[in-house]
Image: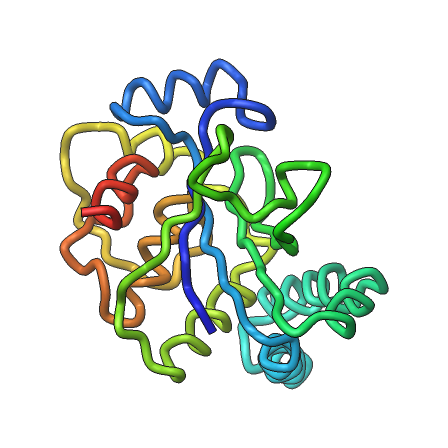
Length: 215
């Protein structure tokens, strides 16, 4: 299992004025980022099975159980997903937290007609994929995939995203929030397993996260 982060520029899907302003205001090329996990289909489905069964047993709070079950059925029980999982040796999943939308996941491929479904490369003008250099154990990898799947369907943290630009730190260090914005979610995912602890997740923008990961 490999944990990476994708960064997107304010073009194509993110070409709106808000995203262009966000990139400019935070002094960088990027307005959005996502947690990207590459692993074997069987590893994904094993985690999905565990989470689904736990939700059916009521291990999570009632509202979370309903949300998790519905999201797993939407994304992982889908016929197209299952066919793809059965025909490939590895899956690359990108977990999205996008303004105005609930947390979602999609499969990325090396080649795709739509760049939204393409694994970003350094030469792409819409974004790039930054490999992480953390020494992550198998248990930490599985924990991160579990966290990402359990977060599907959560609302976007609009106020948090707007306040992340402000020049003061927050006191919050909650590693299991009800809402996230994109870079907060990615930073939190790594902080849960002991990395990027110097960051304030609620004050982390895509550009500040990119700077930390590419030092």
